[in-house]
Length: 303
Ligand SMILES: Cc1cc2nc3c(=O)[nH]c(=O)nc-3n(C[C@H](O)[C@H](O)[C@H](O)COP(=O)(O)OP(=O)(O)OC[C@H]3O[C@@H](n4cnc5c(N)ncnc54)[C@H](O)[C@@H]3O)c2cc1C
Image (tube, rainbow, N blue to C red; front, side):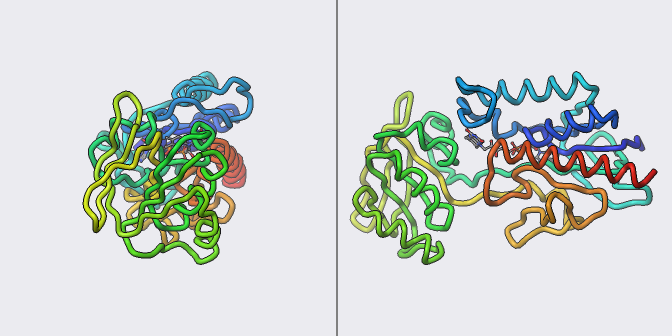
C-alpha cells in the first residue's frame, strides 16, 4: 500500500486549489481526480471568478489550476475512489486498480445537480439549460426563462433571475411548494413577472442551437412555453456514496463539517461536497485552501 502525506479526492476547483497549497508546502499530494468531469469543465463563461476581468472559460480555469498544482509537484491519477476506511496510520483509499494510505485526506468530490431526464435537457445543457442561477442569471437579461422546482432552491433561483429576466415561468409538479413560507412569500408577491404553473410536468426542452421553448403538460393537456432558458432547481446530489458511512453526513447527504473539519481527525472536506448553500467556484477554491492549511497543520502535529 502506497503511503502519502495528503490524498485529495476529486478533480474540480476545490481539489486543484488544495493540491496547489499542499504541493507548495512540500507535502507531495496525490490527487485521485476521478473519471468524470468536474462542474466547471462542463460550463462555458465564468464571469465571477476574481482575476479575470474579461471572464474565463470554465475548462480553461480548471486546466490552468491543475497545471499550477502539477508545476509544484502534485501527482494526479484519474481514478475514482471506491472505498474509504480508517486504519492504523491514516485512511485506506481504494480505487479499481490500487490501494493507498493517506495520513490526511481532503474530500473534494463535489456534487451533481439533479436532472429531469427529459429529451433536450442534455443537448441544450450550457446552451440555455442551466443548474445555477447565481452563476448564469446575468446571461438572461431581458429574456424569458422557465424554472423547474418547488423547494427553497427553486425560490432562490427565481429571485436571482427576477432581477434580469423579462418573464419567468415557475413550473412545479405538485399543487403547492415545498419551500419555506418566507421564501415562497417573496416569489408569490412578485407576480408582475412570474407565472406559476402548479401540477405541471416538464416534458421536453425544445430548440435549434439554443433553447427556444419547454414543452409542458397540465390538466388542460400539452403546451409549449416559449423561452430562452430553463433552470433546473430540483436539488443536488453530493458525491458521497463511496464513503459508505465512514464520515458523518448531514441530513441531505453533504459531508458534515466544522469549518472544513469532518468527523474524522485529519480528514477535511472542501467545495460543493460540504456546501449546500453557496456552491460557487470561489467558495470551493476557498475551502480547498482551508483544507490544505488544516492538513498541513495536522501533519506538523503528527510529527
Ligand atoms: C453549468 C454550471 C455553471 C456554473 N457556473 C459557475 C460560475 O459561473 N461561477 C461560479 O463561481 N460557479 C459556477 N458553477 C458552480 C461551480 O462549478 C461549482 O461550485 C464548483 O465547480 C464546485 O467545485 P468542486 O471542486 O467542489 O466540485 P466539482 O466541480 O463538482 O468536482 C468534483 C470532482 O470530484 C470527482 N469525483 C467525484 N466522485 C469521486 C470519487 N469517488 N473519486 C474521485 N473523484 C471523484 C469528479 O469527477 C469531479 O472531478 C457552475 C456550475 C455548473 C454546473
